Every structure is written in structure tokens, then in C-alpha cells.
Length: 206
Image (cartoon, rainbow, N blue to C red; front, side):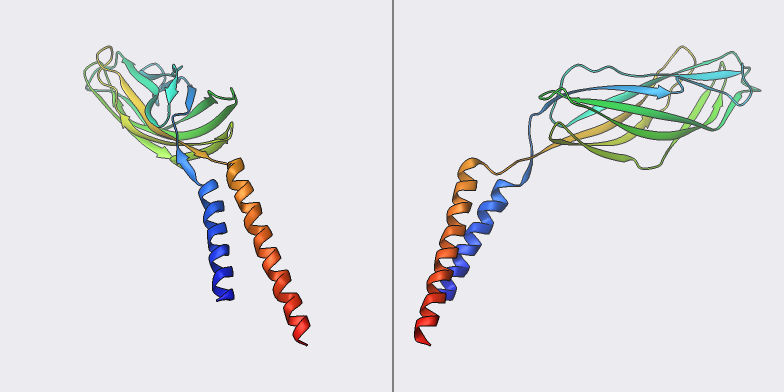
């Protein structure tokens, strides 16, 4: 029975510590800005066509949310019979997140490549994300995780914009509350006292 009581006390203590340290989602306010590098992706033959990438400066975001990282717009005067081509044209997206509770910034990076054809009469732009598509960072005590995608291709020059989006999630790693810490300390004290009593009783029987 004594062993059973000690085990129950240890189990209760473990549950208290676990409850005090779990991660959870929370309505954390934050802001973000994105910077495409380069801001202009030129065709294989310069002057035939290009894709303009524009970054985003957000207002306040609360908790997890889908976000837009860049807008894309095409420009070309090439004849459709001889369109501009893009072959593995690389780019980088720097995404800076500012934690709204602490004003602490942090930056994650994504990379990709553009392939396709573009002219004054048609646009067929394909994208391939390279490297890791999910980047995580602890900012201001909150865990931010950004997964890039999807990619919406831009349309004809001057007609339709494309975009690169992402899903950003925020979790809060909670520290044990004071009451939980006090309860944990009490549990440790009880376990220690029980161990001392059993040790003294064992010595007395010798």
C-alpha cells in the first residue's frame, strides 16, 4: 500500500508539471513583411519579358492565418510565335515576423525557381519551391511556423496578377503557473518526507 501511495503521488506530480508546460494555440497579435530578391525576374533573353515581384507589408494578424507573401505581374511585348522563356530563374523570399506582444522581430527565408513562357498574347508561368517549404522560429516567446504555398501563376501582361501565399501558425509554450509550481513543490516535499520515514523505520528494525 505504501508503494502504491507513493506511485499515485508521483503520478499526480507528473500530471501537474505536464499541464503547466503544454503548448497551445493562442490569439497572439503579430505583423509581417516580405521582400522578394530579386524584385524583377528577367527572361533568358533580357528585354523579351519579365515578372515583377512585389512584397507585402501587413496590418495586424491575430493567431494562425493564411497570408500573401508576394504579388506577381508579367510584362512582355514579345510576339506569341517567339515568346520569352524562363529557365530555372531563381528567387528568394525573406519574411520578417514581428511579435505583437514584445515587438521582437525574426526572419525566415524561402527559395524557388520560375520556368515557363511569356509573350504579349500568352503566359504560362510555372513555379517550383526549392529547399524547405516550412520554416519555424521562436519569436518573443511564441513559436511561429510558416509553410509556403500555394503559388497562383500570373496571367497575361497587364491583365491578371499572380501570388505566392503561405500558412502561418502560432503556438504559445506556456510556463507553469505559480500555483502549479507551488503544488509541484508540495508534491516533492511529501515524497521526500515519505522516503525519510521509510528509511528511519528500516534502520530501527535492524
